Length: 381
Image (cartoon, rainbow, N blue to C red; front, top):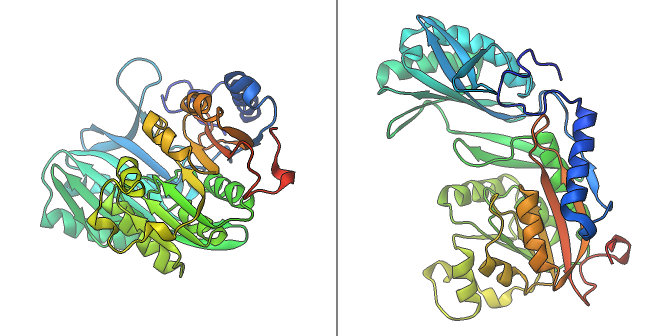
């Protein structure tokens, strides 16, 4: 990827390395970090090195009646004015200059416009315009014209206000093992920013699931992994504390005609008490926990990793699927998990070229168990 702002924009820290050099550097980091836990025994899944981000945010810089996209500078404080960003999805990349021109021509739309967020799916784009002033009917009229002009969806945000012009979501489609899955992705909610690498993660996990019964998923979000994994299990119980994420996941299940998933708004601590019969919850009145035979637990925690109590909780299951956005905390958690588990498979996924960020996935099986995976998959004895 070539970018005229390399060395100036703070977004790309590895601008002085080719993409092949970045891959080599990340592989060496993983080998050094995990050491004898994995040795050289892991797969690395690269990304496209240009137009790979389907979610992006830019500041807006004002100079009189002109506006510019902006990013934080690599060195020092302040905003760097940019005209383009080759990291973003091609549909966003093509829209950016024309959208900026239209915003600039409208005093109502550009007045105290602070930032713009882009969210693209395979066939649509959602644009959020963020303001440091109130917005009202005059703004909405202009925004409707902008939607019609570019065939996009627009949301306006100001202090304690969200103005949705048509809709506040896109429908994403991902292909896993030859099957298409549709997802409702809501503005402001978490979603994977690299569509291509996300599909590789989903496929990697699904291909490694063999004979199974039921799955328990923690931190399920909007169901990114839940939907394709449901084809591998008899039943899935997925937990999440965000009502919005659960609503999106339920909507996506309808889009895909999936009926073997139950979503539960409950923390790990609450679920632990429920499974131990220590406390009853109204949220469980329609769910019989005793009917489940969980052979696997799936976790995709935040960068902080898994807390000690949750590690103790997941250690009761025979198989653990752990997706991590922070190798350092994954390595820390493995120091505890490997007392009871063996590593079956390990992979690294490059969601963010030109940065030091790395996603990884690991599959663990309890020592002495050989259930849910074929012997051919058992790589880390």
